[in-house]
Length: 131
Image 1 (cartoon, helix red, strand yellow):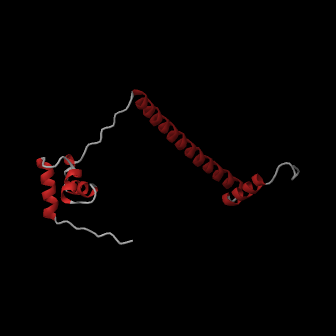
Image 2 (cartoon, rainbow, N blue to C red; image 1 turned 120 degrees about the horizontal axis):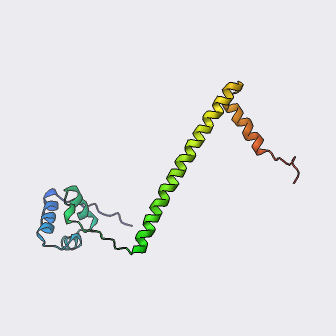
Image 3 (cartoon, one colour; image 1 turned 90 degrees about the vertical axis):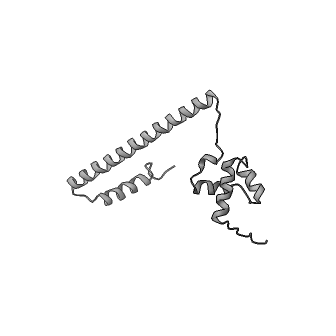
């Protein structure tokens, strides 16, 4: 496979293409790219962004049905609810850790040692090893 050639365009050339798009000589970046042999429209769209001429870029219009709009609204509401539930759970965990730390301090225990022992107790079978 032969490596692609990197093509560099002068500032004057970029400005010329943009001014021709502005004057209406070309209907859009695709037509200008075709006329000048520029590979791909992303090159010209990049120039338009660089020079603050987003007004010459194609606009994206999304047309949705009412049911799609309702579904989107419901999904956004669900995301908010889940984010709130996650925040609540995180706060409960922090509060539980704080209570554990206070209890361990009052009992004269190390918090990490207590957590390790509790983890060992949770991991051992409660039925005496018989299944």
